[in-house]
Amino acid sequence: MDTRTVSDEEVQQHIAEIKAHMPETYKAIQGKAGEIGRRAYELVRRGLRGERNLFWAMERGWVKGTPFNMPEIQPDVALAMVRFGSAYVCIFGVPQEGGAHGAD
Image (cartoon, rainbow, N blue to C red):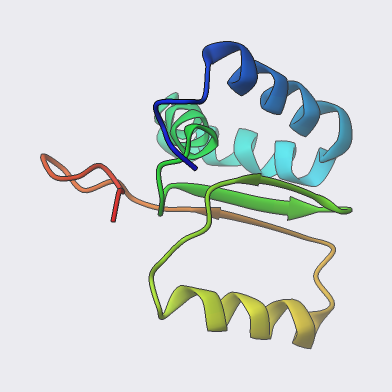
């Protein structure tokens, strides 16, 4: 996803879809905000705009955010989803301070 092509309106639409169709993901986002404050919502918005390694979620057929491209993350998540029959997955990353802000 090209971060220059995702408008604020499209990000708001994705957020509305998370709230309406991904209740466990929305709870996870709120929980993360309880841990790290408003920075959690920034990570979600940046992931929805296409920045890698910041936010990705899947629930009930809905997929939001941008996939992580860290080789050690994807196999671990896939194995856990299969092994434990995950109904949803919500992954937050940590942006690089002063760096590429999660971009590859």
